[in-house]
Amino acid sequence: WSLSFPAPVKEYLDCIIQTGKTISFENNKPYGLLDDKPRTFIYVQSSGANIPWILKP
Figure 1 (cartoon, rainbow, N blue to C red):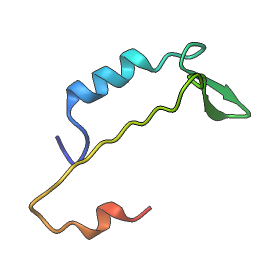
Figure 2: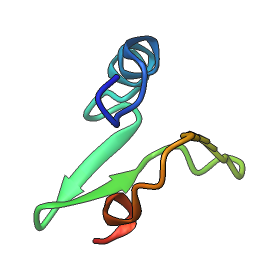
Figure 3: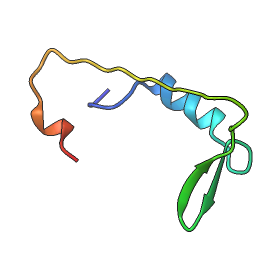
Figure 4: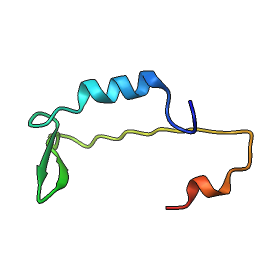
């Protein structure tokens, strides 16, 4: 997956993130529209290799 998330995760996000329904943009900044209850998305990825540069911003 070339140091990224798997294609099924990308497909899922593409299906649920829709402008005007789940996300909006103001001043070129994204704002979530699902504020009826707290929501959390956790993605965990691991590697057997030491790749310190991948965590740098």
